[in-house]
Length: 234
Image 1 (tube, rainbow, N blue to C red):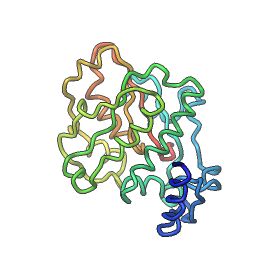
Image 2 (tube, helix red, strand yellow; image 1 turned 120 degrees about the horizontal axis):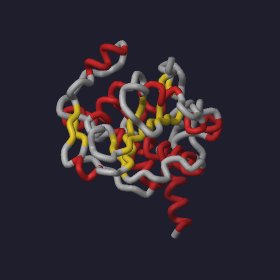
Image 3 (tube, one colour; image 1 turned 90 degrees about the vertical axis):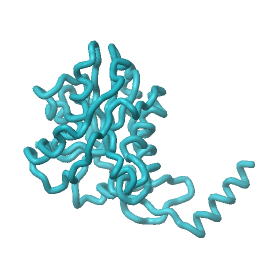
């Protein structure tokens, strides 16, 4: 049966060649989403190896968190930004799950997030969901869940209203743009749980912070944060 699948995949690759999200070159049969050369050069942050890393510093004094990590540096004009663009805008959410699964394996390998009880993706307002057809953060969350073997909970934090894109906004504008956009329901089930909140990218941290604050008052809760992309944090 496997030989027929291999033949089918080979035929599809000829008829509909797959390309690397980073460099655009045609992928080999064994490659998924990103070619081997580009995979070797992903600008990883290695935040999981650093205590009180720059992402954690971003939230210091705003909310109590256990850990905050992001996979790779996101820079607008860098070809690796194509990864997030493909996930979010080009209808390739499976790339988000693939990247998150690989990253989660690294985190598990160094003992991080071994006590996570559930994962909550930053929600997308229904208006954006209808236009896009999916919530990219949910697909990323499910990639983490594949490795951490915990449930993804999409009905706890709710996007009450849409907000303008954060692109080209300053820190204060981004903070104002995310005020009051999230609420939480049935959050008592998170009592004494370690919750991992997941988003696609962190820049100023305004969106993640707004989401996390909706559940921060649950008794005994512990909150950690994870993203794929991380803007260069000053």
